[in-house]
Structures are given as C-alpha cells and as structure tokens.
Length: 187
Image 1 (cartoon, rainbow, N blue to C red):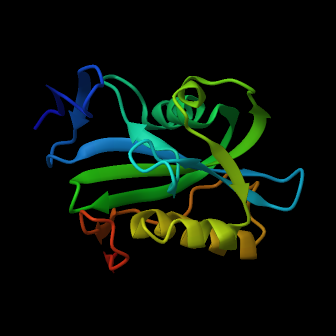
Image 2 (image 1 turned 180 degrees about the vertical axis):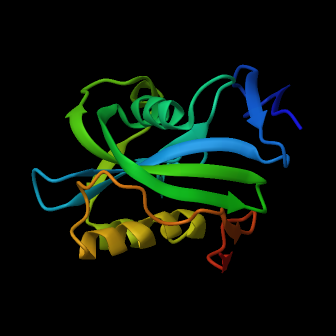
C-alpha cells in the first residue's frame, strides 16, 4: 500500500496543511530531544501553542516528500529557533489516542537564534535539567518516554556517540485526550 496525504485543517486559524499518513493510517511526525553541553547537560523544551503555560518537546508533522530527520530539524528550528547536529535516532513512538507515529532524534544544539517565527507568536523556549524537564512533561506521558530513554543515554555517557539506539518496532502509547498521566506503555 502506498503512503498518502490528506488535506485537513490542523488548528483553528491555521492554513490548510498537508498531513502525511503511513500505510497503517498513522500521522507521520518527527521531532528532537535537543540538548546542550556548554553548561550542565540541559534539555530544550518549548511552550505549547494550545496551552502556553505547558512545556513540550519540539515536534511536528512530516511534509510530503520530506525525510523524517529533515522534518525533525525543520520543526525544531520553527518551534524553538535552534540549529544543531542530529546525533542519532531515539526511536519511533506510536500514540494510539492521537493516531500518530513520531520518529524522535537526539540533537546537539550548536546555535540559538534570537528571533524565530514561533517566538513572534508568543512561543517560548527554555533549558532544563533532564529531571526538571521530566517534571514539566508530566502532562504529556508520551513525551516523558522520550526523556526516559535520554536519561538512560546520559547515564551511559553516550550523548555524542553517533549510533542508533532503542526500538526497532514502534513503542505503543495510549495517552488520554485530556493529557492525563496514565499512559499505557507496551514495546
């Protein structure tokens, strides 16, 4: 079966965007766990557009014809105004509630821009310890799972190694629509 895309409204007030679906009907997404090491190891989070008092991991839809890692880098720049180098793929995370499959990468930030498009819309970025980021993501259990694996990497001091890790098959997450912290995780 071929991959396909469907045009649909993403959010009220947004332009029509093309959403890409995989052959199983899941929305294709990509994002990055961004870190810097010029201070203590810190993780980058951005504020949510929908809930500006909540912090999230930068990620978004993969456009038609776009590679996952290119989409991840684009989304990070659009949402957080940072550039860097992808170190490796963290894995594919499948959310049954939102019917998404998100391919996550680890990105070492090398440049922070003073201005980026989403900042003009009120989006903020912040740097946090891994533990603090975990706490701030308590409303997004799926995104906490991204950090769980980053914490494992940190303990092994593998931040800068360029080798794929984790999941050969998607990690399945059932996250409730109201973002309760009762994610059901199964490999």
